[in-house]
Amino acid sequence: MRRFECGTLVPGCDWHTRADEDAEVVRRAVEHMRSVHGETYIRENMIDNIKARIRSDDPAKASA
Image (cartoon, rainbow, N blue to C red):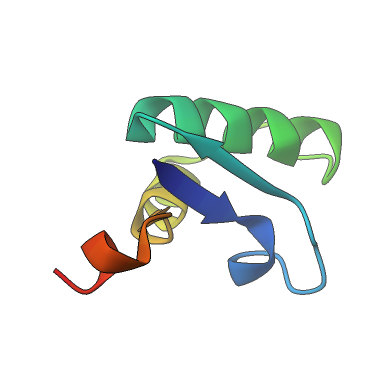
């Protein structure tokens, strides 16, 4: 399971999401950025920043 916490990108935001695949995590995060944070145009560097902040939700895998 993969996890993204919006607060790692937008300080103060408590939203997070989990999914099996990184692509689904990114899709959900982009939708969140549009609907909650008012981002109308998602730049490539925003996608890169989201991808860089995706972590394993399994503590055993996070240290591997």
